[in-house]
Image 1 (cartoon, one colour):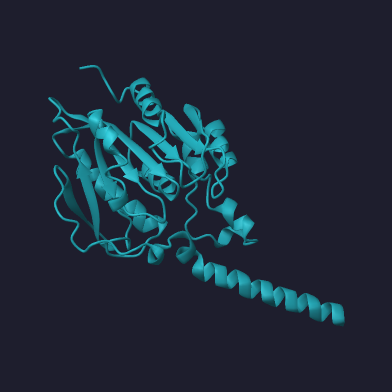
Image 2 (image 1 turned 45 degrees about the vertical axis):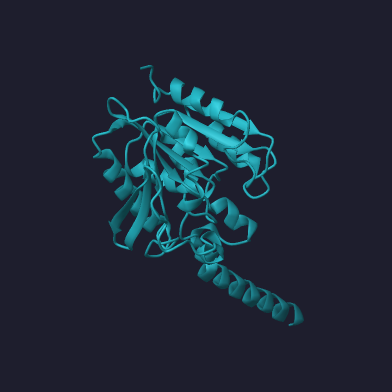
Amino acid sequence: MAIVKTVLWVLLLYSAYVGLIFLMQRQIMFPRGMIPAPSPDPGKAPGREQLWLETLSGRVEAWYLPPAKPPQRPGPAVIFAHGNGELIDFWPDELAPFGRMGIGVLLVEYPGYGRSEGSPSQGSITEAFAAAYDRLKERPDIDPDRIVLFGRSLGGGAVCALAQARPSAALILMSTFINVHAFAKNFLVPSFLVRDPFDNLAVVKTYPQPILIIHGQHDEIIPYRHGMMLYRTASNAKLLSYDCRHNDCLPSLGTFWQDMETFLREAGILRES
């Protein structure tokens, strides 16, 4: 009887633990409450366009950063998705080299983050990014055949979900995971309880355009093996490995932008004038 009681107590405690993780998984995945609140008014920056996207979750903010020199004809653009502990406010300076290459950048906020309304989930994020894509595609200064999707960390899940919903010319995944199910196992939680799976591995397996995988060899949050699995699963991928961890594997790395420009030229995104 003692053994039976012990087993029942273990099962009860495990069920309570799993139930708690199930209820809190979105707070864990989207820790927006831990990010310092941005200014209600971001102010006007030279060239930046503040856009508001209407979604079922409410209004979602996006910023369009035009290239440094106005293109003489429709040019390429990058849609960027940041990590789960960041805001679009953090990225204009980091991504400025795109503008110097003649590429526009669209920064899309997650629902419930920053000044945006709603709550984050795979569904609401995909809706917001699809709305952003549709707005970008209609711009007369954008070549819809040269739209690149670029995601960092959780943002890799956002752009992979967008890649399933809209066509794109290339996909860039930086410090990105294979899927959320892989992390559920670490918490001893059944994968069927994952509400937002972000199955990036399944997306890259069938994605028809060039893919750039960027990963730090010492990433302590999303291990390097995730980047390797994405690279090996994709049919048309290039892998860039850097001597960095997760949050210091940023575009300030010495050769990052040279490597990025090489990939974009090989993928046909950048063309000679």
